[in-house]
Length: 329
Image (cartoon, rainbow, N blue to C red; front, side, top):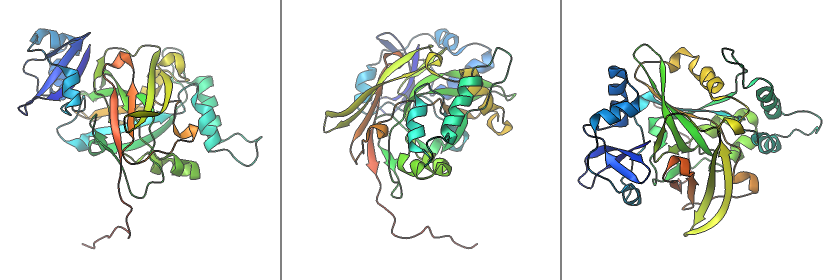
């Protein structure tokens, strides 16, 4: 089952459930966040909560998306309590690209990226009940940096690059006692500045502080072991670059459980009521193929497992001519 959040033509916000080609309004649900909280309070799965409510009127979801009425598949009433975080070097094909970006002058010396990747290969999928090696981790921002499908992804004026990262993200709600509850998974564009990252690996944190988009639909339940999709860059309606991407544990050096453990082991990420969008990594970048995107180019990430494609145009902000002014209080 897939879930989305949609603004109706009259402006009313609804939750839409979909199975196959059938999409319908979930009665008495104004947000996925509220729906998940209700399921948690009732002690049932999200799918069961939807089933209990029955089916409202049908929805043409593709039309709503084309009209810009499809929102993020989950948000938070207070955007500061939605966290965008992620892990890198988690996919089997990710090491070569990152290694080239951070290569040292001595070809015999392993880069930190390759060392991290090898650690994942050796101990990223621990036996049940065991804790594996921690992955690379980064912070992207909060709900203020979450961009709806079809909306522009703004690249700040100081950025050296604004490139897509097609991947899967897990969606989590923290329960009243601090337990993370996984709602499902979404397609995601973990938008980053790869030129800044390439300049110095210690600038990775800077390069990740960019907006991101995810959705349009939330896949409930487990993540398939193999996820296949396509990442594209469009210009003036024409494909400028296109490449397949894969995800799922069959294509990863870390297990999902290991990535989740090393994020939620921190108390600060287990605050009741918070929502987490945790990006699971990728191995496919247009940047690795020498592509430089420009204002107005459209990123498209698609996989049939996740329903409708995720599309966002790039919006390049003008460069600032002076430093940020700090006022003394």
